[in-house]
Length: 151
Image (cartoon, rainbow, N blue to C red; front, side, top):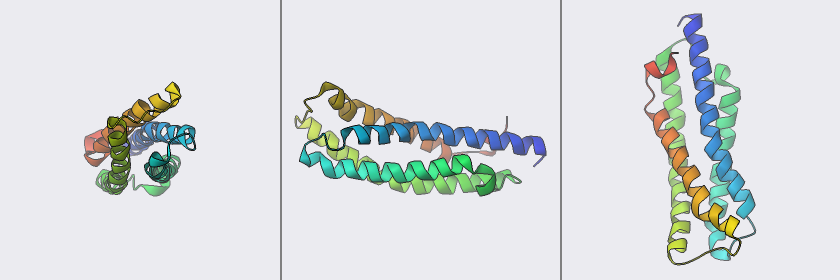
């Protein structure tokens, strides 16, 4: 890969990981605001969300800071394989995260609401929309192509 293409791939991968961080940070911020302020039946799925979200955020943040160190930018096919490996692993984590969110959704469908309207909005909307955005971005990483790494 030419130096120009290598630099382009570096910028694109760094940007992709930065973009993936945003919904994970929103999920963790929501967890931090909700933790200790929800009924007992939400504690377990909320803890799972905090644990899994934190683990993924730390991994994505590390890669964001270390793209050159962690990815073989000399060959696009290698970079793509490495990105996909991470994306597929995060997809496994996401199944657990989605299951915890589904538990919360069922409780909300059964009528569970928080007294504080701002916390209720975080629980009922922000967590879910952040997760949907994370899934959208993760799907893009799973399907990354060589043309995605060129400017």
